Amino acid sequence: MTSLLARLAPLTPLLRRSIVDMSYSHHFVDFHGSAIPTAMKKLLVTQLSPDFRKAVTLMPSVPVPIPGDGDLLVRNRYVGINASDINFSSGRYDPSVKPPFDIGFEGIGEVVALGQIASKNFAVGQPVAYVQTGSFAEYTVVPAKTAIPVPSVTPEFLTFLISGTTAYISLKEFGNLSKGKRVLVTAAAGGTGQFAVQLAKNANCYVIGTCSSEEKAGFLKSIGCDLPINYKAENVASVIKERFPEGVDVVYESVGGEMFDLSVKCLATKGDLIIIGFISGYKTPLGILPVQEAALPAVLLKKSASIHGFFLTHYLSEYKEAIMFLVKLHRSGKLVCEVDNGELSPEGKFTGLESVFRAVDYLYTGKNIGKIVVELPHLVNSKL
Image (cartoon, rainbow, N blue to C red; front, top):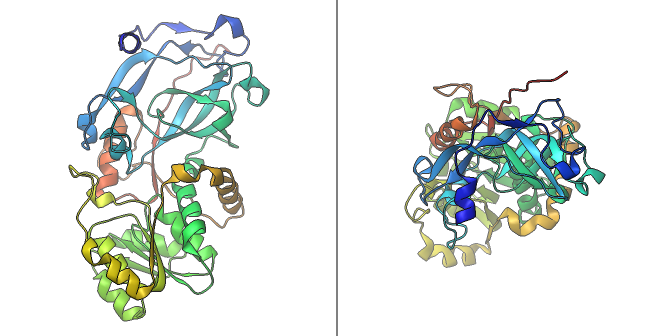
């Protein structure tokens, strides 16, 4: 605890250094020719709560971490916002965790420093992406063995890291997709939903997608969704019952509560329901809304149907192949990676760590189209 408190002690933000570790001075030089600062901003969970603003504190001046031999120091340029950020801030993934602790799951930026071992495969200035706790910071130390080289620092690549891989691996494992299958995707215009829609279309399926506005319905049509359903204007259950009286073959579900109950009811014989989340309940004290689970065994038995839960960390052996597939599909022009940077939000674009709070709030309004990202601009005083 003493060492942790020392790390959080206020520092002079104007104090700068041109190298991080004298023993490896030729490796630890900012690639733009400017000095790497000694202090940075970062977000920390300081109390457990599903209320992100209550749980998380912006630390204005903490030490920039020093990478070890096998590590990279990444200057974060874009970080991704996920619905599960508030599950993490409330301690639901690890009941034993005690604040303060880092938060943020994914980032993309440039390598600004690295250890000697890491320098065998990476170089200062190289763009990299990563999935690791602690991305809500201006700089993050990332093990070289888990860093993902990318062609450029663009937010589109960020969409693959969690959202894209979650959709790809879960559908591959449990979707049993094939030509003509009817696939229902809930929250279809969101960060993960957009990939589920496109991957199902890539498998020649008929895709139905739920959304909350006509603007989102238009987006879904643009990425190949056969039947967008605006649940604020139409009754989803009625539409599906009328159009597909025998039900749907696959449901890709991330909403929970009433939408989960509807999803179970509309499953066809031998249908598969894939649960990747239940966002409708995340802000509640228990993290979940009640469902009609008492009838679940009878409904599934009658239909020989299946329900599968999916948590990305259990499928990391499939991760590299998933990333490669998604990048290849994107480069061929067959995969849209929609990014929402908040330009249309009330206070405008999400820029700087301070705006992470707004971005999380924005996600829970359900107005985003695509993956929500926050840009972290850095002022570089070049010596050149």
